[in-house]
Amino acid sequence: MHKLLFASFCVLFSINVFSQTTYFYAKGTVINAESKLPMQGASVFAENTTLGTVTDQDGKFVLALPNGGYDLIVSYAGFNTKNERISGSASQTPAEINFELSPKDKLMSDVAIVSNGEVKNGWEKYGKFFLEEFIGKTKNSEQCSIKNPEVIKFYFSKRKNRLKVLATESIIIENNAIGYTIKYDMDSFIHEYNTTVTLYSGYPLFEEKKDTTAAQLQIWKNAREETYYGSTLHFMRSLLKKQLDAEGFEIQLLSEENGKETATKVKDYYAALNFNPGDSVNPASFYPNNWKFGILYKDEVPSEKYLAENNDAPKTFQFSSITFQNKEKIFIENNGFYYDQNDITFNEYWAWTKMADALPYDYVAE
Image 1 (tube, one colour):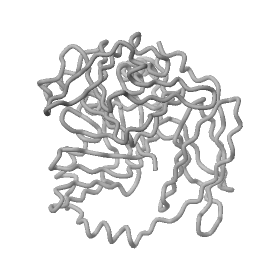
Image 2 (cartoon, one colour):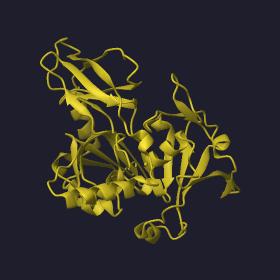
Image 3 (cartoon, one colour):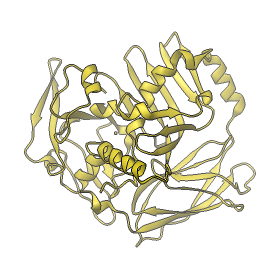
Image 4 (tube, helix red, strand yellow):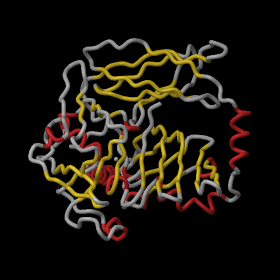
């Protein structure tokens, strides 16, 4: 199952060519796996975008998507979420996608939760920590809030020294910094205190906030652009266009000897990443010569907050790194969607920017 995966440890996501003007259509039917009856009102959306719909009385849906790749998510209260990776263009006619949703096993779920032991007054005890690890500590996070904290439940295991967080409903995130409301279906959130590693995964759906004032709309537009440049989405699109240097990025291969990490500059970024531009049938792909590589974004300096927490971080550029977990290729669709995201971990600056700095795949910077 595809998930958005983020890790937090040590110091832990003009582009007019992506102005999506052509669309393809994802269509299909959602039924109850047990009764085989159509499910009206099921949520169908492209993960990490502003694009979604609900099924009609016959369980059918049609969703127009800009050319590119997506994870199509189908959810319904009380049922297990399903997902399907899709890609397409206006010149293609994708096959109909049908989903069968099975009811959640409430009894087994309740037994598992009780055995883990929910923390009383969990939000009071862990709420601030959860917000910092999930929403982040960037400038944007100061204008973010969770509208329904009551759906978030905390479970602590003394034996494993681990905090687990579950949500009984979608988490509603209000991001007034860049003008989005995010409906986040959390799959899991785990913090390991022994290693200080936090992993969380889920399915976000973005909705642009509305405002009648031109001034506020301009503020959001500027904030989105500032958030975009230097982000993982900006990097993937720049790699796809083979314009890393022009867009402000530099690549270094990282290796460890005698417990010390060393960085090697490379002349040909695309050769070092074994970048394959793909074709009309196959998406672009890459895998580095070293299974960990550094990304310098030279057009912006790090946030003062980040530097205050990371004294050894570079002061004149933003430094991030990517670690390949399974030593397999990462694929990039033409909208910047990359997969399989379970196979890579972001570290340093990109890992410090969390949901407060997340942008949908259908965002286009001017």
